[in-house]
Image (cartoon, rainbow, N blue to C red; front, side, top):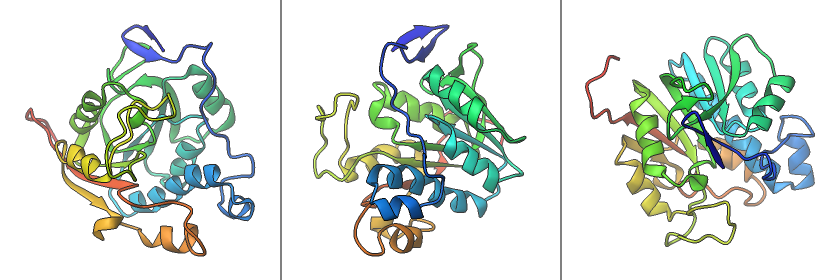
Length: 243
C-alpha cells in the first residue's frame, strides 16, 4: 500500500484481490458448482439488499466494493437510494466503472480510515454502510469503525462481515493479508463500542436470517453465521451532529 493525498491506495505491483461473478449474480450456478468463495461473496449482498429494502435508506456506502457487482446489486434493489462503491485499489474502481452503470450508482477510490476519496475530499455521510470482509485487512480498525459510526446518520446502520468463527482472536492469521481474525465474542464487544445494538444470528436477532437457512445452507453448511454477518444499529456519535 502507498499513501497519496492522505489516502491509502493499493500499490499496482501487488496482486488483485477482488472477486468477479463470472456466472452472473444469482446463487444457483455457484451452488451447483459448490463454489464456496463465490457463494460467500454473493450471498452477503443478496442478504443485505433485502435488509436495507425494509429500512428508510437514501444513501449507501459499499466499502471495499472490488469489481463493483455488489454495489450494482444494491443500486438495482434500492433505486431510490444513492449507492457509492469505494475501494482503495484503483484497478477495482476502473473495472467497476467499466462494468456496472446505473443512474443511482457511482464508484470512487477511497480510504475509510482517512474517510477521504482520491482527491482528498470527505466520502460523505450515509444512511447505511456495507463492509464485507474488509475489517480484517485494516491496520487501524478502531479508527475505521469510528469513522463509519460518526459518518452514519443517527438512524444509520452498518452491515458487516469479517472472519470470526474462532474461540480466540488470531493475531497473526495464516493468510498474510489478514491483520487479525476475531473471535465471535470479541468482535461483538468491539462493535458495541461504536453502536448501541449489534444484531447476530447466533443471538437470534439478525434480520432476514432465514435467507441463510433456506437459500445458502439448506442441504449442508456453506456459510457459518456465527456472528457473521452482523447488523449494527444506533451509531454512537461522540460529538453533537445534525440528524
